[in-house]
Structure formats: C-alpha cells, structure tokens
Image 1: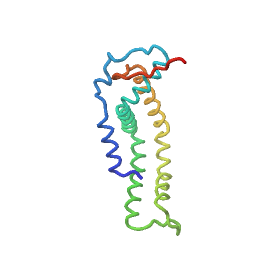
Image 2: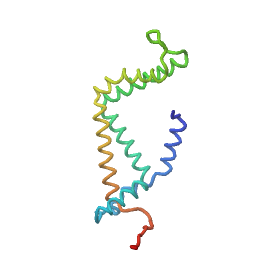
Image 3: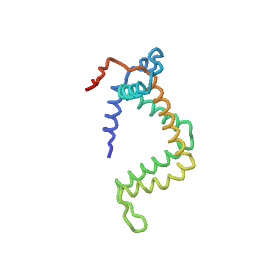
Length: 160
C-alpha cells in the first residue's frame, strides 16, 4: 500500500527532476521532423528528458477536469468521504454487515459501489478518456516537434 511519505517522496523526486519551463516552451527549439525515424528518435529522447514536465502536465489536466466538473467533484467527495469514514470505523472496531465481518478491502469495495452511481452521473468515464486523449495530443505533439535537448552520441551501425 502506498503511504503518504512514499507519495510525497515520489512527488519531490519528480519536482526535483523537472526541466526549466522556458526551455520546455522555447519556440526556437521546435521544428518539423525530417522523417518518421526522426519523429521516433525525438519522441523517445524528449519523453526521457522531459518526463517530469509531462507528468505535471498530466496532473494539471486531471486537476482542470475535476475543477470544471462540479458533479465529478461531488462524486470524488462522496468516495473519499466514505473511505475516510471506513478508516475511522476500522480504528474503533470491525465492521459487521448482515452478521458477517467485512475485511478492509471489502469495505473499500463497498465504498466504491456506493459512489459508483455518482461517478456514472458525473461522466467520469468521459473525463478519463478526455484527460488521456488531451495528454496524448499535447505530449505527443511536443515530443515530436521539440528538437532533442543536449548532446547525445548516436550509436552508428556499420555494414558487415
């Protein structure tokens, strides 16, 4: 299970490895790739080089999607509220439903089942696909058109 310190450590590592945003959006560094091989090379190297920037763009799109959809915000509040109540209840005693003791995993599954109609009404599926599509378009176009950063030695194969 992911703890708060683990998530904070991961976030701090990502933030420490972020590239300067002025290099990321510098218009002089964008050009049309010459061929498909150049596109593949740029995408591979830019995703490796700007990985933390791309993660923050993805997180920004998720945040934008949540903030602009009040119903999705309510659905998330219901789900996390139910999870918090379960957490508080498990500290006190085991939860019993219809004479049967529920494990913590079953309780969280029940919280998901209770909040599922709210997510469905909020259009969470469409939001997920919108975020994924927007991320692929933004990151894919940036990685394809941004010239490769730094001096990379190219491995050359000689014919035998």
